[in-house]
Image (cartoon, rainbow, N blue to C red; front, side):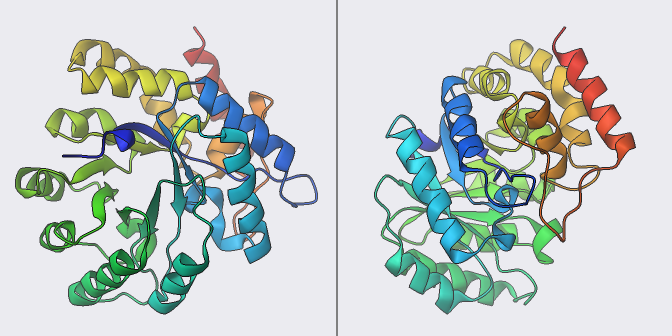
Amino acid sequence: MIDSQFKGMGVAMVTPFKEDFSVDFDALARLTEFLIDGRVHYLVVLGTTGETATLTKDEKKQVYSKIKNVANGKVPLVAGIGGNNTAEIIETLKSFDFTGYDAVLSVSPYYNKPNQEGIFQHYRAISEASPKPVIIYNVPGRTGSNITSSTQLRIANLQNIIGTKEASGNFSQVMEILNKRPENFLVLSGDDSFTFPFMALGMEGVISVIGNAYPRMFSEMVSFCLNKKWDDAKVIHYKLLELMETIFEDGSPGGIKVLLNKLGICSAKVRLPLANVSSKTEEKLLQLFSKTLN
């Protein structure tokens, strides 16, 4: 049976920064509370949206700890633990303090561009090393390689692998996975704007970026989908659609941080090599944000 605690909307949390680009832990606490109050189903800590690649090991430990303490068991927590060095990930899994964390999200190896057998063996090693259930993450636009449907279905049969976050945007691939997956294998959208149609095809939810700023509204849409209230879900989908697309125009998480800044939760700062969105994109984001309030 699919693990029900990861159905629905999980939020891939941003990491807020101060004006000097140090981690803003007060803002991180505000965001955590905002998301829990917004009735998200679970939180994903230090995925791509958290700018994990630019954080030090000490900063990562502090972020994991801060969110765990603020959440205090109110929602399930997923730890983002991935990379392109399999041995290093295994060492991290062995030393990680999983107190308060319920699962791992692990992105497919980037830069190395492994073949499909390499990807499978990578996840087999992680599944054997992790003391918590693992959700794999396929995002070819970032990693430079796709986990094919046949490889994902092969990985799905590994012990301790409970699901996939699918961000290929490939409808044929998604349908094959949904059609042939084991009955206990969770399939989640990695693209906010595709969540509605993908859930109509059979996905169980999303790990969301837009949910940082719209936890209640987007969570409601996902819940409508789970309950097959498609007309109600469609209204929210189209209300947020252009905004969901625009937050990625100048890179993520720069776009979503503009909205969080407008909400008074954190600054719009991102760390190099990311840069803040252009003034043109910011203006468009704020205009679209205003429309959603009506």
